[in-house]
Image 1 (cartoon, rainbow, N blue to C red):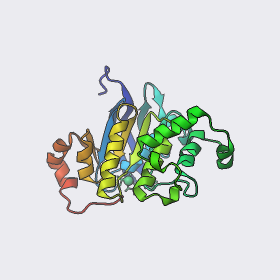
Image 2 (cartoon, rainbow, N blue to C red; image 1 turned 30 degrees about the vertical axis):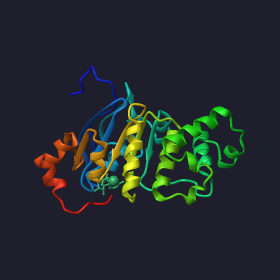
Image 3 (cartoon, rainbow, N blue to C red; image 1 turned 180 degrees about the vertical axis):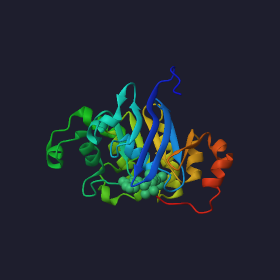
Image 4 (cartoon, rainbow, N blue to C red; image 1 turned 180 degrees about the horizontal axis):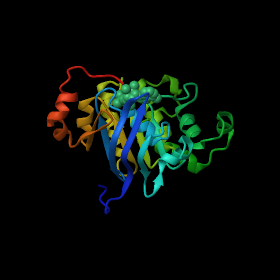
Length: 256
Ligand code: ADP
Ligand code: MG
């Protein structure tokens, strides 16, 4: 049960979702503290992305409670409304405006609903410039402010996209496999970046790379067949017999 003294940013209770008779999410319970950085692992098809789809309103659960902060029932809201409440999601592949500068990419995100042309022609206030600079510093791209986004490496594009989400100052950030396709050095930097967000934002990270999970060193939730198999420190989950059997014992890394 949900301990009453805790302040949760996110509560999922008894969530179920069936696709054409296939139970993708099954009696899922998940609690996350405000400001927490949580890692979700699990074999391919475990329901990790579907869980994010449910939180962000892309998929509606059949039954169950999905609550944000205190008393906001997310199952009643659409994707747009949920995003407006401060929940942002980063998909696996980066989607940045390759023809625009790094600075302009963050600016476009900051301006939100405005069209690209209007956003870029609009006068930029000193506070906006400062904000963009702060975001670029956070994601380690301050020196590349004038670069075309298309000239960035894969890893740098991922950081730029995280910066674009940060420009909107989300309370809850959902990141699906941020280190996929990155070099070891980029992966390590991504870990540092995510850790630097902890406390200021609540962050959920789906990840396959156990070295990266170990670097993050935060509470891990293991999903299996749409439900929580086990939760705890990296060491706890790696030594859990059930986890070894369904996931970590497998030799090959699975791709999502
Ligand atoms: P993971 O991200 O853990 O690899 P997913 O959440 O993507 O797993 O998928 C869980 C299961 O649900 C998979 O078997 C997948 O095929 C199924 N699934 C996910 N989304 C849909 C959908 N929109 N329609 C039908 N089946 C889906
Ligand atoms: Mg997935």
